[in-house]
Image 1 (cartoon, rainbow, N blue to C red):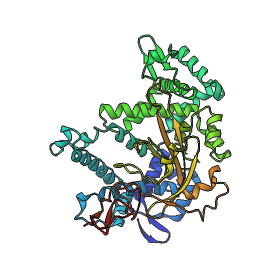
Image 2 (image 1 turned 135 degrees about the vertical axis):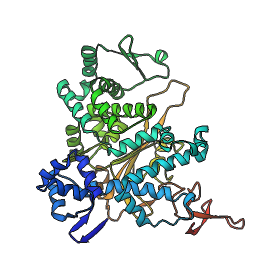
Image 3 (image 1 turned 30 degrees about the horizontal axis):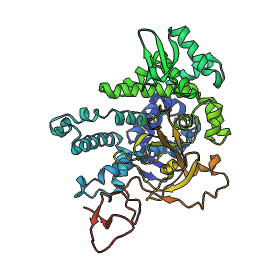
Image 4 (image 1 turned 180 degrees about the vertical axis):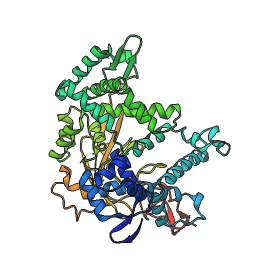
Length: 481
């Protein structure tokens, strides 16, 4: 980011993203700020500076927290670029951190392309498929689409995990139904029956077997397993309604994502349907108001909205409406083997795309204390501190003798927001000692960690048969070049 004085900043890409997140054209935002559309165009092309007065007017007119909007994407992009350029592939290239930050800030499109390219390279290198092994003869973008989960996550991140069309549609539906949380399931079942001729049936497990929900198009029946708990049943009905009543919105959002292969397109559509279902169960205005009033007490929110712990945590990551934002949370779902099956961030937490999580983060400890909510201050190697809570959750029960599925949910935010949480009450947040963690072992350069599973890819491994250290791996202090 360049500046010609203390009051003039060249932040064109950031300014453009703010405008796009608000859903405004250059003409519309120019009218709101009292300047010409041509000047907006020059600002976004970094040919004119943004004065402090314009930034203040932008914040006041649209009720923006410029710290969140102006840095969240750049911090995430920088973390991903740092992970990519730590790979031994770039051992002979010493790219300064500042250059990576400049790239993330000024050229987000290039950053996006590098992420795709590296993801394709990683899959090819691991030899997951014959097609991956032949990457040199194929289109990189096409191969990247072979991982629909990562592609869908990427599209969610590009929208900051907030979809205004679906939020409004969900609010309209709840207004029409006009029922309390405990009456939502019956109201949704009635709407499916009366408006869509779909009958809802709760079915025994010996009929549904391993299936939790199935829509029988021929008989116009929505079948839900008896194993699904009440919040899950309401969620599945809302999901089915979303596919039917919000089809136009879903297609519009998917269309804006550009060309997609069939698998990522279908997964993105399912993800959007899930988003709508959560919005129906926890309508934005009522949910945000309750969250603020209760200091984000997740268990009370779950009771009030007849939702599950994971549903509430996930919903908290979506509160990014302009003029009505909640705390920018990040969320992680992990199993007891350390596999990450869900990650969302409306803040700046640098999740790794190509590895697991740090074992020192107490999200993993919840399996030892299944009935307790754990809290922790964590600190990354760069000194950034976060406040996190974690709890184990049980998914729909499995018939005996199948193992009961268990996951850990980690929810956190930057320390500057922690005082607003009921879980931080009574803590001296300024003096609270943070647990030093890393993004994951392959990127973490902390020494003498007893939990380390592999050496950092940025350091040379030291092998000495005469010495046994606390950590299983010793490595040089100098970065490999």
